[in-house]
Length: 151
Image 1 (spheres, rainbow, N blue to C red):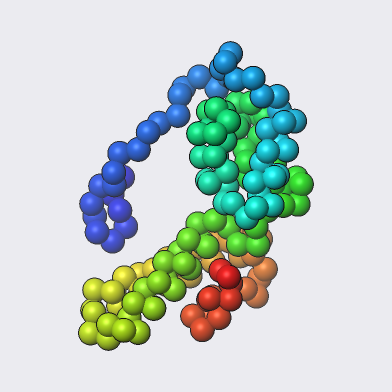
Image 2 (cartoon, rainbow, N blue to C red):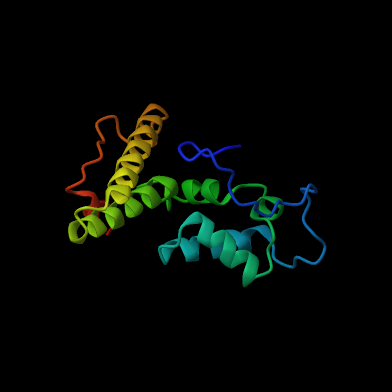
């Protein structure tokens, strides 16, 4: 699928195996994996970072195959989910970095356009999260207070 604004194709990524069963070489049980996820969540890791750590350090290729649940579902069940969804947080960090860049580079029109596009994506995502009640109905993105959201 093409990207929204540049109409270019993205980089090819690795694909998960078709087989959804736990490999025989995975020695970790479901409860142990859930405890590892909660421990990593307490150290303020995002869900994707947790998945990468579990894959690279503990040899767990798919949390869903071992536990039957996604990482985010486990965090929600244990009331350890972050205040902001991961993709919204990443867009806010990108927007903050662009605004910081534009403070010292006033005439960078490309960066200005990138900031506008990023803010537009943030607003669309916020509208979706408000509709699905993952964010409060009165939640609004404010450029001035954005640094406080991520800190």
